[in-house]
Amino acid sequence: MPLWTFYGLRQGKASTRWPADGDDGQAGILGMPRFEPAQCQDGCRECANACLPGAITITADAGGPDCSRVNIDYGRCVACQMCVEYCPTGAFTASNDWAFGVRRREDLVWARAVGSPEGTALRGEIRRIFGRSLHVRHVDAGSCNGCESELQALNNPFYNLHRLGIFFTPSPRFADLLLVTGPVTYAMRGPLEEAHRAMPDPHFVMAIGTCAVSGGVNGGGHACGRGVEEVLPVDVYLPGCPPNPAAIIQALLMLLRRMPQRVSGGKIVEDADHA
Image 1 (cartoon, rainbow, N blue to C red):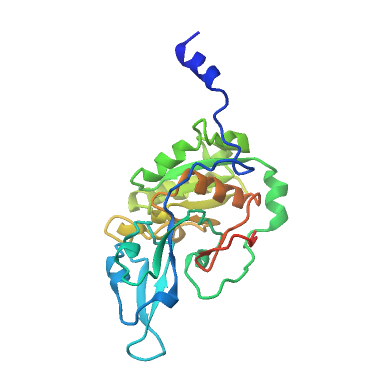
Image 2: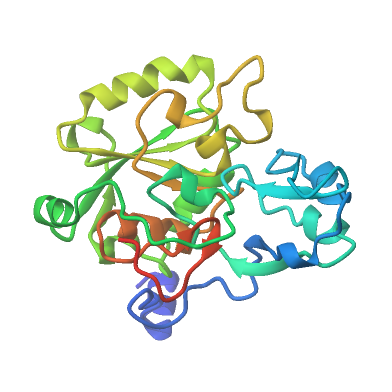
């Protein structure tokens, strides 16, 4: 018996039971920074000046020339925590909010009030068509390979994606979901569209990573566009640089209506089901 087989038998089952229960493997991992507007200081631009991908912008408010409003687009956020570091008043704080998968792009934009919008996909149709399984075709449309590293972790013994009935397939002709990483470089635009056309109906598209959601730091440059939405209709957006494996699983199960959407108006809403 090979040594590694003997070691594995002695260690026992390594897969987590999450999301049913148990460990999600993300203890201590920093997620999207939280924002508290009441802590903001009028005229301060430290957060916007420090935000490399342009996720934070400042606009003039109706209160007068000295008043300003902070606008946050988590679809452009790479969770670098620079806003937390540079904010002098504590309006931005670090958090473990990593489950940021949404069905509507606007749900990644911070809003003062949290609503309860319906997802655009039909509730019953997805469960009826796909049951409890999903076949995924991944296309790297110019990624730095950070997202690919997290995708590879989905099939390790801890996350064991197959236990959830979700499988990667090498051909778009057998895929239900086109999972895209990268900002969609001009060289990859044609192959991405060809993969999409080869998929049988019904099918869905998921943008994984901040680059795929909005173009990221390099979006709109000489070699790439501003994300998947410029090329294909997107059903699920998951920002992050890169999003961790648990966040990817949460977004996949959200597509299948097996987990709720936890974000609305750019905020985590623990007790709301936006499915």
